[in-house]
Length: 225
Length: 249
Image 1 (tube, rainbow over the protein chains, first blue to last red):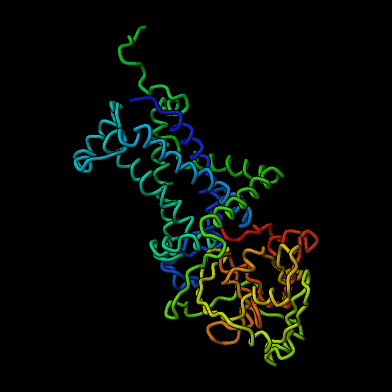
Image 2 (image 1 turned 135 degrees about the vertical axis):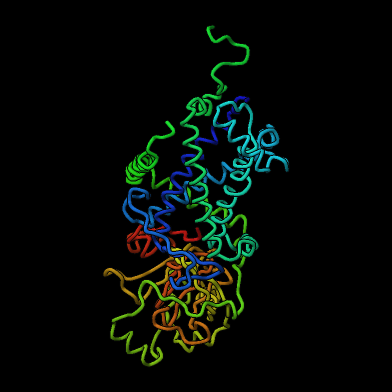
């Protein structure tokens, strides 16, 4: 595996901080109206497709219910998240990270390819991006993170005048809000798996900080040397 | 490490983040950062959309079956209740402040002005939306008739409702004041405005959240600054709850 580029490492940690703040302040915003709808409008709980639990204080920013402060944190952290996503996409396209590590071919999506990569991952033998990693990281960069950005923009009443097609494409404002909520939890699920797997091989975390190669020894080095 | 108790780890990270955030929130530096982020969103929205870009308008079939009332939904004041019963025959809308031609309009005067009808979506800061048909004169027409002076930078809306012992008010800048969809509505779904939705007159500030759409409007005031009005943050919820003045996010 090659070293992580500086752009990758910087983005990774800035984005990690941003999505923690966005997620936790987002739970406060969810508490303000705990019902999700499809379509353009929705205000009556009878019309909701989902009645969301009230998220407890330990999971929210701030820890007591304060919608105004939660919105301040949310719309502030949206800047590093949104700008960061544009920057990392540009960097990945320019430095070949996308083409090298995130593109998949049709045969990568077969159950066999995914199972093989899961077994290799468990054995710690993986040296390059496996089909499973390509698929998961590809879904993050190609689908979920952009979906968060675009649904977030679409919910803003001031942004709709700039891009009315965005609301139409997402099926209306309340649909965009529902998708924003669902994508947030999909990203949460990814982060849980990602953190557990990284903790299982802590050198991966070191590599994301220093950029050093995550294999215990560089190729050609001697175990005793 | 894989079998590390996941729940307590996440709770630990969450607690760390939340307590750090609450400490940062109390500092003035955080408020400046929040303000910069808010200004950035406003600048981005206006740069991408242009100052006059319209929000989507809907067909009658796309309206929500009812229109939720929120915040103040009834006014105890005897004069208001008397006027509500009489169809607001003695209600006056004043246009004042930094104007050369102060106006005092009856409801008949308001209805006699050129009207704009629009079916738009109302987004509350809490997250819900409703769609209704509004009719009324454009604010721009009133401001032109009152001859707003060049030093005016904001328009204040003075309201008849009182929340937590304070008069409700709101403010917008001249970009939103002269936006074509900024109207003073006197009907909702082709009926006179119901009390819960702000009878007899309410603002429609279509590119911002619901709390900007002042209800029960008594007066429209042109000012150079809102520093000396209320607590100086430009609106009731801005003063009371520290909500963002630019509610387009």
